Image (tube, rainbow, N blue to C red; front, top):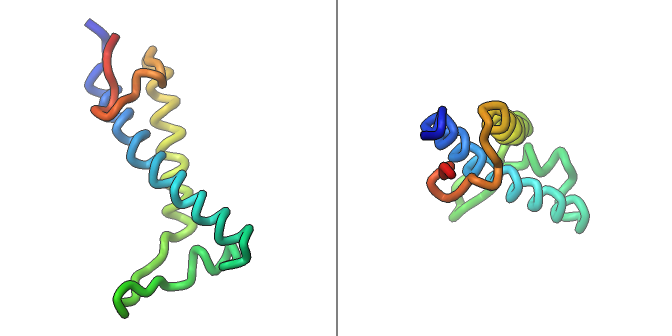
Length: 95
């Protein structure tokens, strides 16, 4: 029986969710900056309008939290003797 499997499943789930959201936001940021749609500051501060309703964009702090939660969760999985290749749709699979 693998040790800490429940904790690894939770950490794997964090890596999947936070990592995916961070990557998508980073790709959007790079496209916006490279093609001149928005500046770095506008990307994080300019409100987004959906159906005439103003919604807040992702903040720089949220972007950093997503990044660091992904990195810390991945490091904890490694420290607990796990492998990042075992992360799957259910969080983490044992051997």
